[in-house]
Image 1 (cartoon, rainbow, N blue to C red):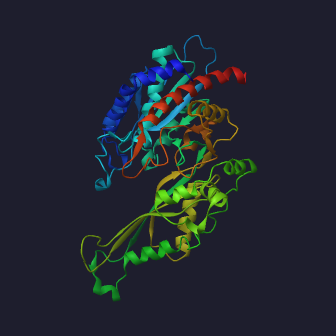
Image 2: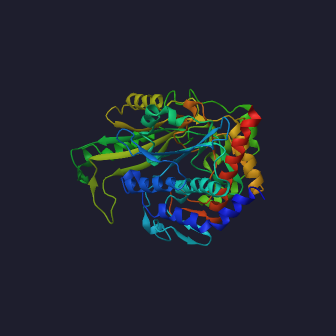
Image 3: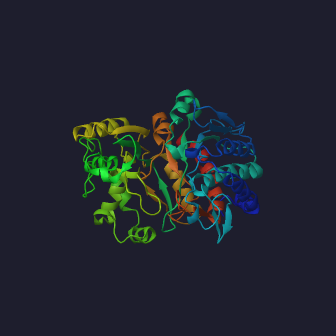
Length: 460
């Protein structure tokens, strides 16, 4: 058995670690609503105290604090490596509550799963990492490497103040590698690894007509803000899914031969995805390699929300005086979100929509870690030996996050490893993880620690 002594301890203390997780899950922490954030940060801080991490709350110049903690290697370890863990204690809103099968803040266990908002994204991974260190300390004593925790409170709203933390405390971001906040199993059940994230340019658009909503009979002569915004949105992308903003694709890079080979090694889960999402085909009828390349190496432009006029029960013949839409653009390597924002505004102006107010809500740079980075081999072999399966390695993820801020700009290689699964429903009702995956994830982190520490000798 891999790490037999630590694995046995984890199994014997599984209920204790599950209890730690339930405590954190039962505390709402929705950054978008400023709900329970102070309390959640305090719980994370206390849990880090279990492992002697000397946690502290670090100000982000007005945003939610970063919970930072570190545990040093034993005194007898020569030139120890440093591994950092990036996580976030904020979660998505739980609404709509009526679509949950149980209270999203109850952390109920049924059918071998823990059901709660944030259990997969990202509290399960926070506690699994703390538990792995705790188990190591109880069984083997001092650590073979230095460990750092950077746990922010604003990831779900685009990490708007994390750049302040990294600018003020670059020394705390230094590491030989970073285990990123998410990870786990694919739809097939096979473990998976991601080595990067797309960037993000998130904007909010406002259209204005009359100074208030009016009787819809006046639609003969009074501008309708909703129509104005719909026409502006329609100019952004066509039915061919091609974004129509001039210059939008100029810096998009095709996958290298090595990256394409990595995609080719991934299994085909197209059919499973169609079943999961309840659709009969993907956009543009994409399947196989074409779909894999588009998922990883093409940017997106998505209407994330639209609000205007009357949307309640029954009828109300009203003409909207204002309309608002939220649009997110996930960006590929080399695309700069601030440049894309300028192109976005220029496009609207050129199309005659200079009256539309555009606000930049979030800007994240895309980033990737090389397939050949040492941490990739450590995490993948740990998956192989512990899970008994070869992991799927994705050169990047279709999602977004502050990988650039915490990893690439400091020359730190990043890699995902976690306790989620392809049906965890992150950001959706009935978010869940399997209890067995949580326990296995604890052991996986312990094995990564052991092997990454030992790789120092190999590299020298």
